[in-house]
Image (cartoon, rainbow, N blue to C red; front, side, top):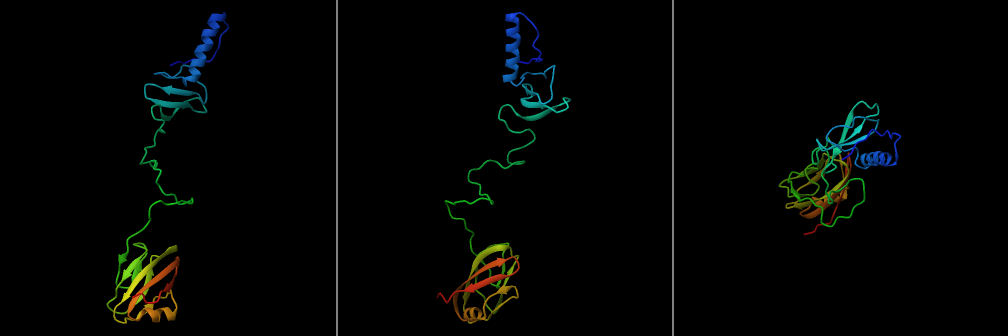
Length: 199
């Protein structure tokens, strides 16, 4: 620990060298000490060993600004996991290309009324007990998924105004059978295709 006023006085060789070495020791130790340096300068560093905080003098040289802890380097005022996200090498990011090493999936939601809430799930299984109107609610631009439609008794399947599907496909899935209906949304409409009967 060392501090200095950074004023190298004229002195004989040995005294001059001792004064200079003290100044250099203060520099390399960030002016460390249990009390603040007596002489201060704008932007000066001080390793406060009493509080365990690295501090810096402000531009007006009128106050100390707490920067980070001496023991860990964690910024003062930021709590990891509260103010900033804790480090996790496996955290997915939304603004970069990524390769996933395990499946990213959501379980299929059973919803038999033909109205699918896209804020709940992306993939659905529907076994209607009467005619239904294919409807997609809470749509988001770019959201896509599938519906496994099991029509057990020629129930008529119609489409909501925001469900865009061909009349040919609607006629097909209104017959008994198991179908896969795929959709992609532009945020307003869900554009759908339907498979042939799969069973």
